[in-house]
Length: 584
Image: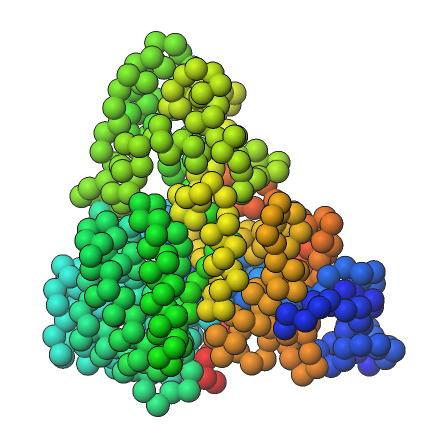
């Protein structure tokens, strides 16, 4: 007898094949039959033509701390994800020397915009080395499966201490020690290694991240930890010195080739259209294609929409946060703050002021923020009212604050001011900083179709006060597979990006496709009802920390190893998720 039977589903099997109507039978957590299935089952789900897809595989999350207090991996569980990878961008919480936990909290708070108070109160410490961290996570119940990368910054700090934070070059002895610890983590089941080299990443005190200037010798030495292993990936984020010295692009990209060649493992890097530097993504593409032609397994992690921020008076960012007149009322409750901003005298004073510099020592805010604030009248053409009930992530420039200001005959700064000050102060503004230089997602369309593209960059669990890009999985199926005006992806293409392509990259041969013998990680979706959900600022993190949360609608159910973890609009008590130990 089957445990579970889906009848008359529209199966998008994850391979990219055209949808087909079929029954799918499940027993002991695995798919055992696809086609016409007449065997009786303990539970039968009448799919009635709804999409049945493999569970989604998200390769770029930051749940490293949240995994110790949140069994469900929210918000990813609300968006069809059944397997996720954390430890990206070189930041995380292991390894760690006893008594130095606060250093890693400051690092994560600054780089990934996760409230330090929430991390300090929420993380259940109890490990030192990375294998111990894996054991601690493995002992906790979870809803979905997860894997962990070994992050470069904590590894460097574990071995080098204060010298790491001072960005002192690693000695041969340091490199050998880091390689030893990395090898031990990989043998314990870590899925790979991550590193970050971007000027936009700072600690909460404004310091550079410890490994951001790691030498060729250090990276090559660490890559040697993969020697003789049959598993593992490398993940890299870099802006290739775009803001400091764009001429160094070639030398910085050479490090990608070094890592890929020395490790012998698949390597993926962040791929987006930056601003400034809107043409750099083409150079990254050319070098990635050349690397692949040379036999290096190089991939490009690609988003499904603009990379940016949601601005709001209670969010982490908004255009007035550095204005002296705003700072006078910044601590008022939200509705009172909005009322104070509506005072005509205060409004006139603020609009006549200049913003203080926000970046610099003692703050994690990157220099890019000050650059953008200086260009507010120009970039307002890329700032849009975010209507919470139906968020539009590919808005027209006609709906921008630049256009609103022109219609009103006022400055864009005033138009933004009035929007934020209206009502109870809860109005939001969507600002796609990257991937939106042309005022649309045509560049993203080209990226998603590239053969080396991997669907990624959700940053789920991070940047909680500015975005909820965990919803990018759902967005791929609503916008790109159904509703976009212009070039789209077929539903089966979108599902392949979300499932089997990422599973293959990670070396997970047991999931990502609906086929007999594979895991029953599944989503049942009503495509007509599918919606990314309303972005809401909620205070559900430890210590009352706030974050943006979006709960998608239209998922009829999500199953992990045959157990239902989401049913309609509710999560279930089932906890079938586990740590996936790579190579085991």
